[in-house]
Length: 185
Image 1 (cartoon, rainbow, N blue to C red):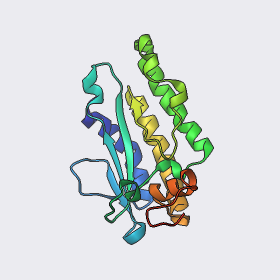
Image 2: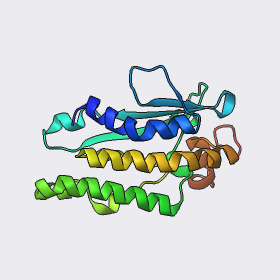
Image 3: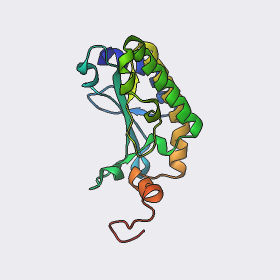
């Protein structure tokens, strides 16, 4: 499935929800880019395809990822992004894994030897682990768009209630026994 077909399918499901919750289209060369809010709590939601994925082998699944970025400049890339999985529940992550499993089952059904490329124990996302979402069919794309359309309206208020960059999350959760560059723990 080419980029235009993916974008049209995803957009058809996600865009009405994005419009309903006040996401605004970003001026971008890519179609699947939105912003929410203004000022320090503004968020940019960019769904980007991996153009190399389908170029590897014609039957390889497509890949895309969501990047949520914050305004401002920082020397640390982690300080300008938020992970979707910082603010998701275990049930929402389970639903993510179910969509990923279904898409990869579609791929593996036609390529049983390829099952080793996508070990099931590595499909569960975490805030500090970037994830690609895979798709083979239009149904896979719609399932992903439905998952994101169901989650983002719940996710935004959670973020706004306790805003934290990925870097701040890492310091709070993963590196709490370390000192930050400015000498504070």
